[in-house]
Image (cartoon, rainbow, N blue to C red; front, side):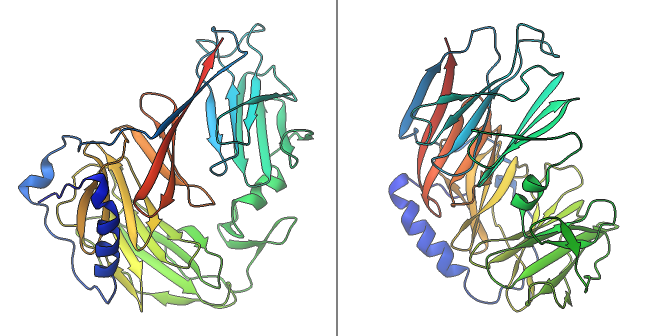
Length: 361
């Protein structure tokens, strides 16, 4: 059955599930029980703080696109006024925060008139795309920008990950400070579609073919590779994603062909082990590793954690339409739903949630 916990019990849950997850787990995913079909959201705790700031932007603008780099630094782009494309009376407006959304300052947008605007942010890099005029990249927090007609800019590519798949060739490349260079040794993975690495020596490459998962691992930063069998899950896998946390904990996430059914999960120990999730909901919106050997899940049933072979509900203020991701400093960010952005600061499942809202004047 699906467990429910109060806020006081979150820390106990973390210790219990993380402890239960230690050891060699070799089991097939359970057949979901009838209780798992319930999609009523679990009771949610209220956000601890709402940071609502009014900025000097006319009310004709749509809500902004907001992207945080870590718990303190983020950017907001106002770029639409109703139906796209934006008209002459709707130039893009760019704002930045360095105090977690408590205050916002306006930055000069390098090309505010365009048919379509995009914002991309990573540690030390802010990239703006103004179609069809090109890309603008800043490495000083938006004080100055360099222009590139064809993209994406090298600074943005390099900020993604040290190891990436090279567009066009599909090979695994390593960022050398200027470009992605193909590794001398390439992993032999059918349907290769993902590669990830943490802060250590481990690199994981994975893919799927005909609904079956495949993976290879490197313990020497990609100089050599070992093909690693991936136990067959219950059902087919559409897209396989490799996730390596900063501490070296490695996962595979097997997205189902319909993209909404509960995914297959594997954790790397001596080999890839299927991760059980007794009582899990049938549908999900997003999944993300949160440390401590736990995976967070959001969806129609609210938020929950997978660990120790089972699914347990979490009292997080995350609605069914919000997607969860992890920032570079470990902060959780939930976007979508009823507007605003949620930041969860803390350890594993014990999080303090803050809602960030920007209002027009």
